[in-house]
Amino acid sequence: MSDPRRRIPGTDTLLAEPRLAEAVRRLGRPLVKGAVTDAQRRARTGEIAPEDVVEAAVGGLPERAGSLRPLINATGVLVHTNLGRAPLSHAARDAVLAAAGWTDIEFDLAEGRRARRGRGALTALARAVPGAGAVHVVNNNAAALLLCAMALAAGGREIVISRGELVEIGDGFRIPELLAGTGARLREVGTTNRTTARDYAGAVGPETAFLLKVHPSNFQVTGFTAAAGVTELAALGPPLVVDIGSGLLSPHRLLPDEPDAATALRDGAALVTASGDKLLGGPQAGLLLGDAPLVERLRRHPAARALRVDKLTLAALEATLRGPEAPVVTALTAEEAGLRSRAALLVERLRDAGVQAAVVRTEAVIGGGGAPAVTLPSAAVGLPPGYGRPLRTGPVPVIGRVEAGRCLLDLRTVAASEDRALLDSVLAAHRAVPERTRPGNGGSDSGSERPCR
Image (tube, rainbow, N blue to C red):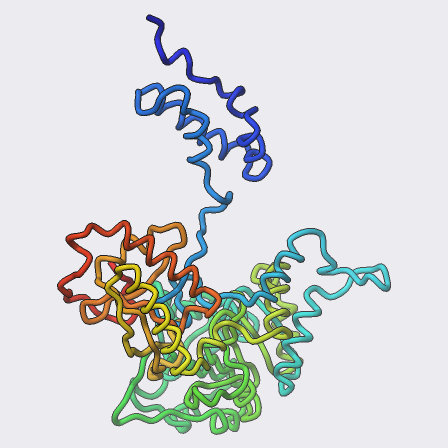
């Protein structure tokens, strides 16, 4: 008898198969060839028959060339760093797609000559914050602070900052280390819980480059506390740089204690830095707004070239600023009654399919280092905790959280247009959960940002 492995199709034959040939065009030859090679290996080891190699290769192809997968954020965390922070609006996504090819990023079509890079996004940002004399965009908020230090505190000049604002911004990165790495010197004033304008005034001298006020956006200090206001610090003389963090451009009724760019500039800040991918709801970017000569000084610094954003970011930022309400804003302002109605409808359909589900009143949070004291009343679909893994690993991954022994799917961070996909994902997870574990007996895991297990 002949060796069955001789019947395994060759690589060139497989790559010529119509479905795999189309995949080469869509995904690229290396990725498709990898799926083919894996299918051939499985046939050689006897795992599949030689006649099944084509189907195995097709089945092993990913949907897209990139590894990032779209998912449904049902954690109740509006700006979830692990899930990409703010989701872009459909207008911003369309703008990114339009900018993906050749585009007039630095070209004036009417005049036929070079133009200022990203002028549309910069104009939109300036219109969103009329109090800014000028604006600039870099690749994130840390880069904005870095550029301020490099341009204004070169040669070891001093940056005066409160000890209570020497914050860590995530993943081990700390504001003092970030700034000290530029060669600037930090002049720490006040104490962890109390710093007054007099403390800053006592530190101002010939070597002072600027005063820095950093919003401690991911923690709270309560009790016997004091902090100097923007107006007080702006009156001391040196330029005042205010890092507002979360990217709120103007006051919001639901976030009365969250600093915003317009108010900081009105109160005398020379420069304001902020994030683009948090409460603004846009792409990752660092926003610089304020005094025109200072902004121009930053823009012309040699490091600005290394920190500049690409055309896709500029396109998404402009569409976010000019276009419809961003998904983060929609989630922030959603009415609890509407969320409960959606949850009740989903639970009804799930129960009809035999899923043990319930409407759960819960609380959502801002996340992403924004408004740590703010909670938002919300509604969730409550499931047994054993649903967490099949939900995460399904065709459309769903990320919830475990709270009081239940897997909660918080609808404040789920768009209404995603309800159908959410329902289908839960039903698929129900089929994947072993019968004996479906009811669940509760568990000890809890926490607003802990994903379902």
